[in-house]
Length: 185
Image (cartoon, rainbow, N blue to C red):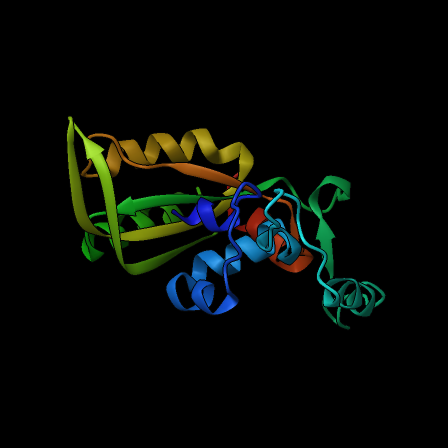
């Protein structure tokens, strides 16, 4: 359903009120990922031009990062190693905390956030399941993904645990260096 709101193939105009009210996080993700002009599509399937988008681009494009904040793009930097964010779901708080602590203790990640209160809907063994879960958001080096995946599989209560990695394309140089110094080589 979320892709329907973000897709260029969507023919009706979606009001920003509906998007904000029903899907605030997905709406924000779509705006950040696909650009605001891609949310508004004409009946021919082409993006509509919004008069304020060029104004926002010109207003903010000329401003660099704030002082005392060093932002980098990973491709061009030798100071930071390629880093990733890994999502792992767990059945409850205790399992999440135990797994998070073991991951950080083994220096397989610099940081693990535990996000409570998610609900997962999935198909398992031919049946639709709905379960409350917690989400671990793990920040680590790309080179540690194999070892991290093996650790999760060995210490996770699920038969097939979720391990999904997303690249970190850039960010605060100090934070990315901290990920490097807090994880094993």
